[in-house]
Length: 119
Image (cartoon, rainbow, N blue to C red):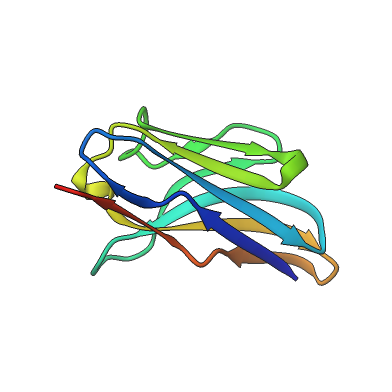
């Protein structure tokens, strides 16, 4: 099994910054894709950004130019640097990975971390 532990959420002023982290652990053979999704109250979960083990990153149009996703393969960790935060960025942010473990390829989710605009 694979476990994901997120950190870094919180309350932030408009225009502020936060950095989210998500560390994967467990019986990991290879992590193919790491990403962040978010879900605002009353809305469906949506893609924020993804980063493959090789290749280019992908961002939702709403966060392009403001958010940056990165990963540290040695630490099995993905980060989301969020700058110029807006009220509409308020949501629960979920980490996601597509990971090969001893049970095969799996789709794993973190528990979520709350990001709240203070306005």
